[in-house]
Amino acid sequence: MRYIFLSLIFSLSLFPGVKKENNGRQAAGQKPDSVIIKKCQDFEITGYGTSDQWTNTKWINLPQEAGNISPHKTMTKVLYSQKGIYFLYNCEDSKLTSSMKADNLNLWEGDVVEAFLWPDESFPVYFEYELSPFNFELPIIVPNKNGNFLGWLPWHYDGSRKTRHAVSVSRVQTQNENQITAWTAEFFIPFDLLTPLIAGPPVSGDRWRANLYRIDYDNGIVPYSWQKTEKTFHEYKKFGIFKFE
Image (cartoon, rainbow, N blue to C red; front, top):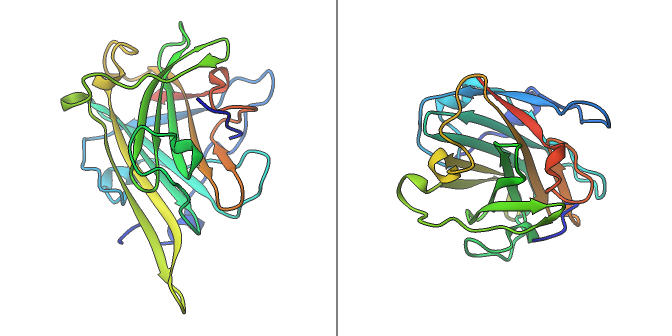
């Protein structure tokens, strides 16, 4: 693993007006932040985030971690259905940085969004999903024993166990070129893929530990996270809480 300090699309006018949620960070001795995950009907993944289902939930802001400073904002939304959990990331950007051109590579070494899901706190094994702006994915189960961790790729990764994902890029016309302004990642993680981390789909009132991340490489490494970490994104005890509606 790694050390991490670590087109039709949303119009740019959406970003200034979105309502930020859970901007506070977990301080020492405080309980982790939580967010309500609303239930939805299943819908198609397009990479544009234009499904009406997304209008039923609020944006979550991903603040930057300490280090290099970027003017780019990152916002996410999360929903769940009877079949799986949906994620939408809107990432302001000025260039796409990644040399990874296939699935299951070291996507974190380039621009990427990530979601970590830890449904069962009784043992330190969680699911990690990464998606690059070129629509390459990395889905892994991570056993983490006292800070020693390594990912395992899924087996029988097809049918109802297969993720769905898509990415789109927003540009504006400048004098000399089409300038990138943002990219959007939309993906669906089926609950069947999380077996046996979960016994079945969550029901109203269930709680999962989770965290949401982005890494941008425009100006050095700029990591974003919903719940602040110190050295790596794999500090699972600092994850926030998803409360299923």
